[in-house]
Length: 122
Length: 194
Image (cartoon, rainbow over all chains, first blue to last red):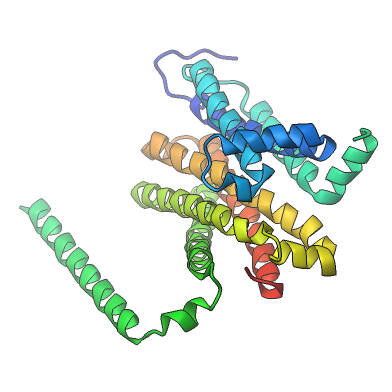
């Protein structure tokens, strides 16, 4: 992990892509949670209702969007602060990003979601 | 002197474009049967805007795919064009999702398409629609981050092959998730619209 102060390197880009990946992973995990627990689904829906117009009609999807958005933006802010003046290994970061996106996509494919819920005893 | 001439030419071109747009909008406004165009649904306006922005997004994301190819191969590219294009791409993405959220309300309502699908062919909602509603959300962070990196690094994109690869990958992924969501959305709308 090389540190290069006062030099704009790949760190800013790495922070941005990792944060996007975290937001999408959060979306998939929250969706899995809502499929497993009605209480969690209600909580997620209530989070959406806090600010999103029409959230009552949109349903728990509003809360899933909200949590995903929050995880994305907060993690971007934090990772940007950490990586602003340095960069991590480029290939490792790219691999983590791609694997994270692939996991998020797979978990959101409904047959996999339902299988995971069944396997985890939800 | 040369700079002033260029500014003058740009102003003329922009003026002509605005005038042509105004004429086209005027002709459309006086000649189009808007009710027929939008349909008879109570939700026709919001679904029309969702479709309109999805159509614009389809254009910008396809241009993005082409730009990704140029970034990937390192051939000539215009950073200024990419900045404007990527911002438009992210804006079209955001507006498509915004109106998608709005149209989701009648989709879920009693007697709406969701009820229809659950009664007649549940897999259409339970598999295809549910996957579509999430893959559509993938496009926003990917498109926003692509635009951010293009604007943040600007000309530095030319110097870093690694950075160009990251931006190209983001643009390709945006295109992929858009195509999945758009294809499924179009198919579901053909089966039963709001």
